[in-house]
Image 1 (cartoon, one colour):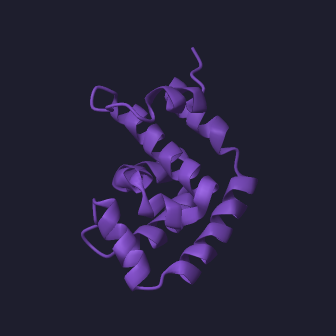
Image 2 (cartoon, helix red, strand yellow; image 1 turned 135 degrees about the vertical axis):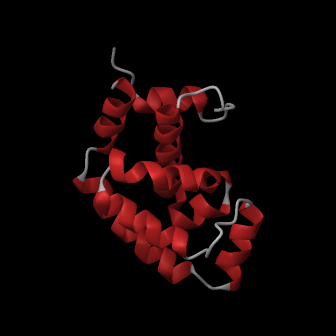
Length: 130
């Protein structure tokens, strides 16, 4: 049975994900990432709750969408240092204090090129159906 990644995301985006499988949580984390960056760039992703699942997305991206996606995402997460701040307010403060706007804008451009050159929806749907 094929499960559409975005239909799945709509169903579980705002839900407690603890009862889902690891693969399902990973697909949702990647959808969080794609949804937020497509809506408002990396700034929006990290500034709001979408970025709460960043560590799960980082683990999932190499397998689900490939090395180019994982490398780009890793660069973005690295801007926040280690350990990655789990709180959106901490991440927003880092964005503002370190004047990351230009850097995040450049990452946005690279993200949009990946979006245009990859059928990410199909790959995520495939991962859910495996």
